[in-house]
Image 1 (cartoon, one colour):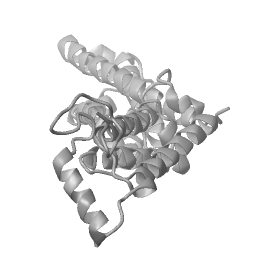
Image 2 (cartoon, helix red, strand yellow):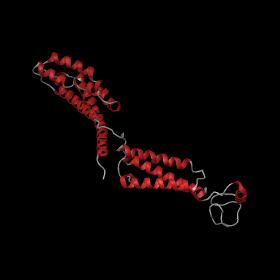
Image 3 (cartoon, rainbow, N blue to C red):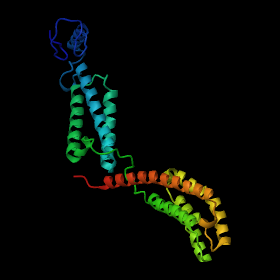
Image 4 (cartoon, rainbow, N blue to C red):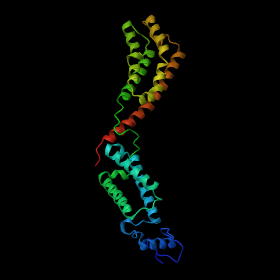
Length: 281
């Protein structure tokens, strides 16, 4: 027998295996319509059955997959237009999945299919890399700026470490002028503190460990600076206890290792921003 609603062919049964209508109730409904209660619903307004639910669910999953690909390969985060496209595909996918239990009409299904098909085709032509996973995850914002202040602070921190190292290595300091130059090379208020305060919030959090490790040496270095002024022309290498010098050098080595890790993160962000600004073909 053929289902009067969807045309599915099947053996004699109580209800349709495809669209789920109960044949007896359908016949009663048609009889009422023929009795003058209204015309039968046909054409574009005809409700569809279970197969349509499966199709719409698959279409919803496909739309969500496109939105996810756009996020993972970074294409949606390069400009405002692709970002909006990603959001719309995500919303369309959620809409289709949430409403899959509804019995939609043929006209509604055709409109949904046409809109999603044209949008997907246009996106494929305009941004073919949307459908690729070859590019790295882009974790930045849509218009993230280069981490210039972070790069500047890295240079200041490395200069600070190098200045302390020169201070510890100085055995002969003939004049007070040379002594003051040694001290100024690692004076925190000359560069380290202002450089850290200029950092954006997220970069301050990134650099905080290095910054605090270097600032922890400040009281000791101030005492050593005062002693240097008294000991001239002898430098710290001549009178600083070896154990204390080794401890300071260990702290500097750990700070330098921390800086290497931080610099790798800054370099990765710089590369991602540069990639996001590169024109696509």
